Image (cartoon, rainbow, N blue to C red; front, side, top):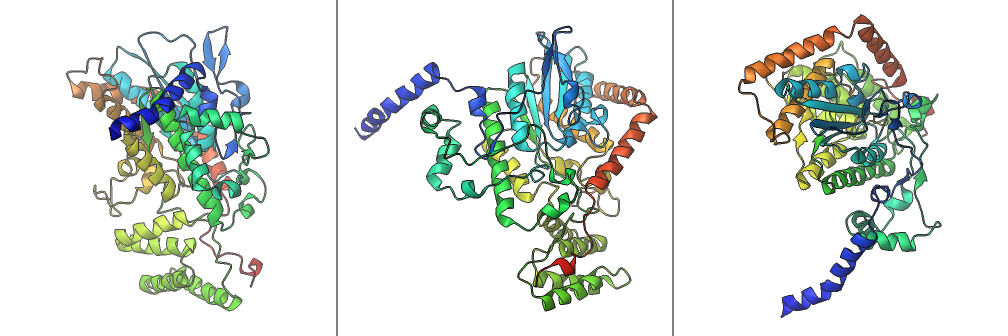
Length: 486
């Protein structure tokens, strides 16, 4: 009787939910509404070229994307895979020709030579997850057979305000999270929303990164509230993308964003504002000892410890301590300090641990295959032995976060193999000779690389220098002591 009473009480809501889903279905645009920022003015990326019957990225978007096109009418035998994310997906500082989507495609062509694969690179320079989410909504309309997401590094590049949303109560937070899943909730929001209660910020049509402007580094300061807002925004956006793709029954793979730790000091260091002038002077004395490579490492580590006792969020001291432990072979201590140096970076140009954990937790929660990028890039220890040590190998990166061409090859192959193992192509016959498929891949890879030419690599090295200038100002040096308040 109790169960019957519960069922009868819930029945009207179930009927209303069913009627609304059928009679007033939620559009893709409504599903993709971001409660933190207004992105409705963003234009579709792909335009229809009627002369070739292809959808392609137009010339005016090439400041952020590279050419990509696919047929507007998909053939029955075509396997279409979209790879979405930021500049890592695009293959910077080189380009799409050596990015991991091309190695994914070549790997699949080697295993299934009779199949037509379309692997479309939708990597946008400086594109954060909230911009990637709009691209997801768009490509869902183009008959994808699978999607891959690699996002999380660009979340701190653009200005956004989170005050009102972070102050929202649990009911408002719950309603926002349920709006994409329960049609009654989203319908009520549509009916009763008012222009005066919106707290979202309108984003520009294209990326407007702080570091794209002179003095951009100066806009970054210690701001735990803003950092927390950015991380919450990513969590909500990533969950929304995953559920949107899952609801459409499109297979999805997600990559854990990873970055270089050993050779990348924090881009900006600031001391706690609460420190007095005398404390700052004492910190400066310890800092000079910590950075003096003529001194014994234990003395330098002791100075780092003193700096961190005064200011536990000192990213610079964490980095120096991490490097010293790394050079001593103390990997466990090195890993802890190097990760904290990244997480406490005042100018976070790499995905924080909270963002990395969001990717893993959401993928596990939604039963989505995860590509463990940090593990793929951890193949050797500090001595060069083929032994993973818990810290990604610097040789897999060309800068603070962009993989080397070899890193892209490793990642692309891993995604392809994971897709095959998870049955994405279960209707296709697997090759009887795995060695032959491997040989075909190596031949395709060599042929592809040989066709690029030296100019391709020269342009890549020039872009790398540009990236380093763009991120100029990262510190292993002390903050400007005179500019700090007492």
